[in-house]
Length: 295
Ligand SMILES: [Ca+2]
Image (cartoon, rainbow, N blue to C red):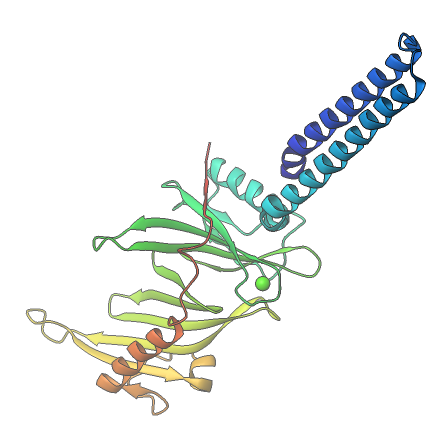
């Protein structure tokens, strides 16, 4: 649908150019058939040749210009747009239909796709395309964009979507109110969420395009107890990396786990890792964002 729309102006211009050419050719023919200028045949031929040559040159020039302009201005965007258009259309329709959860368009969604909660989209959201794993195919990001109290633009990711070899969509991660989801750059994500009143998790994850999933690089756990309600709770910090992070499952006592860093060492390392993984920039600021307009 989009492709057709985008091609329409080019086709129209081309048609006009062809009509113009035909018009000029007819003019040349009619001048010849009238035969009013019979005083010098050679001169007439020259005039004819000049007209035809000029017409051909203009026509070639016009076509080349159209082809070049179309390729330069539209091809990079329309590839990804065309790839994800079905998803975007179906997603927009699902929000408009007040559906609560969304995993992708029927018949075109991978079984690996996770569900996105849709009840948080009514404030509006935007989308962009980024090739986060550098395989030449863009992934789709859907985000809520706003300026925070410090004047910094925030990209609160609501969904990250890839497309598999069969052309099926995979929502590989969804963000929601209790689990903030941010892009760090270079295929790395930051996820932060609450596991309850006395428990909070945050992690750095890397996108693995071979499984359409995220693997945990670092897991930061904050456990707390409140022995005296009149005082601040006591916090316990733990940080898991490597295999301990990749295989992390909360067992109720991260602070007692010997495979994790704790307290100040955990917090310092966590801050260092966040800085390291986001050092290359996210690319979100320079991306072209399109607002999704809900009916
Ligand atoms: Ca990609």
